[in-house]
Length: 223
Image (tube, rainbow, N blue to C red; front, top):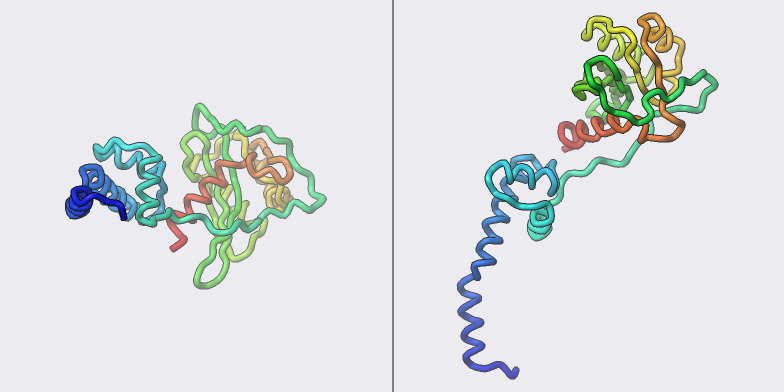
């Protein structure tokens, strides 16, 4: 093979005793795997890098990503998207007052609402939520086996009671038939709330609610 005798024995010795770089790599892989399993496989390289830094191991996202790849570890991903918005109706829609400005300087300035589906052992359930953009806290929610106007109405009622009936709140949602219904709109009018709706087919107009549902499903439901 054209290999010198001394080179062959040097290679044998290196193979028997791993290099310092490989030893460091093994220690890193162990720490990354521990952080991965501590998060129950829910977090990818960005979050794990932050966790490891908090634990005193200064690593960047690319280093953690390479370690995960070496070990064949992948974060749990969301399942295939299932649309829950029915915007094919003749009900009136509200203008987009939010315009993708998801910031608030105080509680009860802006709420965003949305509906998602949850697959359970007993069939589908639908969840409606309202999130206060100031703290990103879910202030109202409701669940039902059917995706009706009552579902979003119940979530709004809970938010109103829990926040002691505030007035002038911008309540943003998509333009689904539930949110355009007479029942829901009458609740907004009666309690002096300002209705805002996303543009048709634009999920980015309600990105905060979409992000919450993604985290809920990946971290608390799937698996």
